[in-house]
Image (tube, rainbow, N blue to C red; front, top):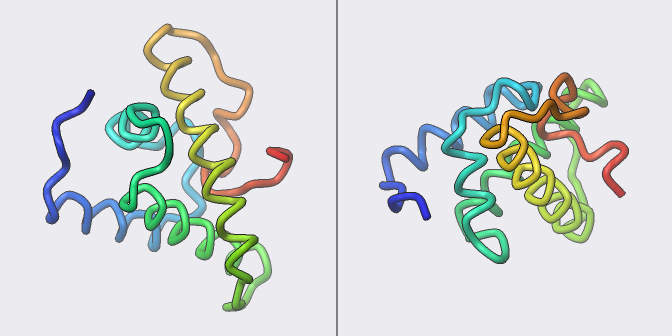
Length: 111
C-alpha cells in the first residue's frame, strides 16, 4: 500500500488531470496507477482525479466545454479506475499493455 498522498501532491495531480487530459496510458505516473490499484474501490481523491480528467478529455474530444450527466461520470470513474489497476499490474510485472498508446482518461472501448 502506498504512503498517503498529501494535499499538495493531490492538488498537483488534479491539476495534471485538468491540464493534460489527453495524456496517454504509458505516460501516467506510477504513483497514480499504484494508488488506483491499492484500494478495493476508488477513493474520494481517485474519484475526483478521474472525474476531472474525464471531463477534460470529453471537452477535448468534442472541441468545446460540455456538461456531463453524473451517471456518465460515475461509470467513467469506475472503468478508468479499473484500467489504471490493470496498467499498474502490467507495469510492475513487465508486461506490455494494449492500452499503452490510448488516452488515459478516455473510456472508449472500456465498456
